[in-house]
Image (cartoon, rainbow, N blue to C red):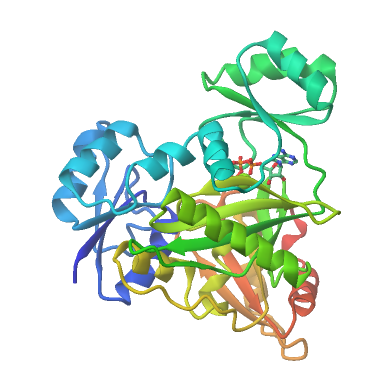
Amino acid sequence: GATIGILGGGQLGRMLTLAGRNMGYRFVTLDPTEDSPCGQVADEQIVAGYDHVISARKLAEQAEVITYEFENVDAQVTELLMKEAYVPQGSQLLYTTQHRIREKKAIEAAGAPVAPYEEITSAAQLREVVERFGTPCVLKTATGGYDGKGQWVIRSLDETQEAFDTLIKSGAELVLEQFIHFDKELSVIAARSPGGEVKAFPAAENIHVNNILHLSIVPARIPASVQKEAEELAVRIASSMGVIGLLAVELFLTPDGQLYVNELAPRPHNSGHYTMESCRTSQFEQHIRAICNLPLGSTELMTPVVMVNLLGQHVDPLLELLDQPGFEDEELGVSAKIHLYGKHEAKHNRKMGHVNLLASDTARALTWIERSAIWESK
Ligand code: ATP
Ligand code: MG
Ligand code: MG
């Protein structure tokens, strides 16, 4: 089969590779660290050197199709790859999703709602916009943020100078958002193929701890009409942006039922890991299908599921529990599907794996999580 090249050797690349190998593809990954999670399962890993462009050229020489597992791909690398290889997702999708303001404009252009926002260029202007928006509001770097890094929740006007000074240090542009007092956070992952076919996976209800995803609950505990609306928004955005491959859409749901789009990711998403055993097609298989121009698979949910992330501090308790009776809790009727990413050092808050808990309803899966006591160390 054809060779697919993946920029980045983390867990997303690993799970893409595991899905794509079943479909007959070869995989080469490019990552600076040897024995990366993806490199361990790929046919080959190119160890990226200091010069990203030279490394990317090596990948382009070996792969017929190139994709990525993170959106912060260097613009020069994208340019080279577009010239010397086939990158079905294109460069525009990266350009848009690398920058929060460009991303918000693309979301608005698709007719989807975002929280009121404004580009911030000085401390004085920040103060003026905070006065207008009211507190709290959220100052974010336009580029480079993840897991809540590069953000400051401004709770009073007195904080504006400090917030500005702290975030401007990174050299990034800044954007201020009005704070959305949400009831729930949701995400929808959609896939679009080159011919324009689009399919969305069921909306996930996401719970974060310390700004890191903790749980995805599916079906989300929201009215069916809101699930449908969230899924339609994701389809609309993917279509409007002409996405190829996956697009993850993070949303806020307010108590009065209003949805706002928070941010996008043009790749497999942590909140889509639940699809692996619970949907007819996983997000990883769907991405491969989309970029290889195969028909998209069914996104039907076969069973309720809760995905729980395994961070560094959770790995030892999980391994201990594996030996205990009741891990597969027959009384509760929960089956626990473990995924570990092959990372060597279990650092605090580092994403080491996840568990998909399949059950006849999500309440049972949540009970399993509570009983297991693995996730008590935060
Ligand atoms: P990720 O790891 O998902 O990429 P990130 O660092 O890019 O995260 P965001 O998703 O923008 O950051 O924000 C992180 C979290 O902060 C959100 O999941 C949400 O809980 C909260 N948050 C962000 N923006 C707002 C907002 N405008 N109003 C209320 N809460 C917000
Ligand atoms: Mg983000
Ligand atoms: Mg986010």
